[in-house]
Image (cartoon, rainbow, N blue to C red; front, side, top):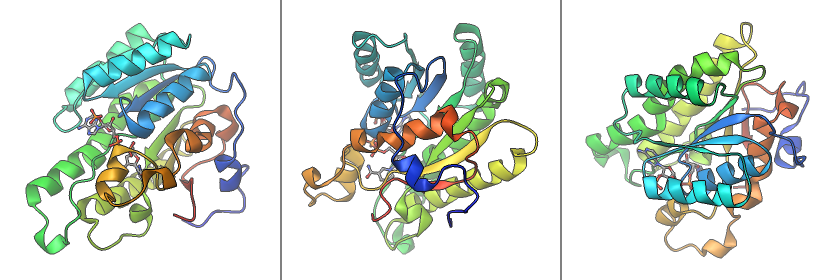
Length: 262
Ligand SMILES: NC(=O)c1ccc[n+]([C@@H]2O[C@H](COP(=O)([O-])OP(=O)(O)OC[C@H]3O[C@@H](n4cnc5c(N)ncnc54)[C@H](OP(=O)(O)O)[C@@H]3O)[C@@H](O)[C@H]2O)c1
């Protein structure tokens, strides 16, 4: 997407955002895939800036570890939401929304970060079951969870939904198969939600493309690469914080590349 010139914050401003200690104070933010990689660091970063973080992921032991890290740094008590997005039902997600309303009382932000890579294979040979699994985790569950959380997010004064794309979502590339197509779909979902809600709610929808980042997923995609040559999740947190903070309340429908040269 071309960067519009009427943004109150440019993409450079978002990438280089300098948070204040209370940038997210009083906000409650749900992070999917919060047990590892970028999601884990986003959850810790949000908690360090005052947010109550709801940790959603499929591996409970990883969520427990992040929960303990937040408690030991003195952050607001987080919540653990074990859920496998591959087979979670819409009813289960709605039950989560009811629980959040009862236990936390509000939801200000939703970071859709969880994702799977599938395989790097020509489309001609792509396994249909694996294709469906990638689409379920990366796209369908993202839509379902957004729908389920909308009542809480619409009630927030400045709700923010952030999707996670990829360079191959913005520009599809040979052999990236279901993953690239799923990220294209996520960018489209953010765009359509933006168009459908911009005149009726205070909600904003944006996409982040983190760029090459030192995580397990990246290591699987590029096994020969030296991980030390990559940015860490900590290095790219400015954009993740900015899009959740009230500094970005006028930023809608953007795809923000955090490492534009990747
Ligand atoms: N790293 C990069 O270079 C890069 C570049 C562009 C875009 N991205 C995107 O950034 C996001 C985070 O990627 P990452 O590199 O941090 O990946 P990662 O290290 O593989 O972490 C992915 C997270 O998603 C969770 N997850 C996977 N399947 C799930 C499911 N069925 N239900 C619930 N949670 C599930 C994982 O849980 P478990 O730990 O329990 O498996 C893990 O916490 C993804 O959307 C990815 O596509 C990453």
